[in-house]
Image (cartoon, rainbow, N blue to C red):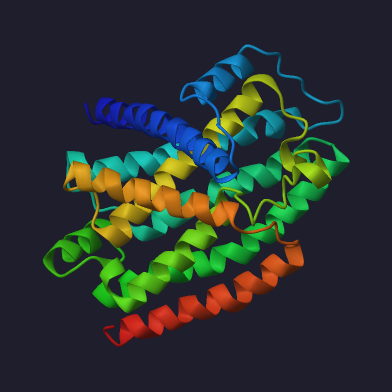
Length: 302
């Protein structure tokens, strides 16, 4: 029975976050279009694009490591779905003690899968993209972890369910100065995880012709796109739970989700792409500094 329950939760996570992620991707495209004075795609466009890709042939390039090439998008999407399953389990079905460390590790896997995808394809541009993605991963991961440690320092526990409960007793993490700073540091670092501007150097269509995923087609490309959509919805849901008190009130929770999504899209559309050296300086400089500052404020109870 336990295995059936776990399978049901994972399958439900795939369906829920897949659907929410695809719609979030459409919202991103639509809002981006309106900012640029364009009409934008209809709501069903991402569904149509995904279905079209699944019906096309998956071409494996000559010289590629076939196993790693095909396994990379699967590993990324599984990690994102399992993260979503943990969020659903701990928030709705039963009081699961889900540790922050597990979430951090799982959220690393999609980025690593992109590096593996580029390195295993045998394409020069993809290899350059993989190198950039690896440097990007090393740059944003430190401030991302520092941002997530702020509530840990404040409440003295790494159990996310306990942190959510304490937010209901006191006030949401975003209501503290340390939590406010950590939230924005975390959001900016998370944009590196999903490859949004200004952190899209690993794909950089105008430079690398899609970079790490340049050799992907058909179902494998569809899975990579779905991974990004699911990661977007899972990441935003996690920030709502971890910094904004969660989804105890469904209507308010949905509004929180939309606000965070709008914030990410606005940052994406108001900043130019950074060079990899600029990203490293920014992440290890300003972002890390503000992350450490937030931890100090949390230790002081602010």
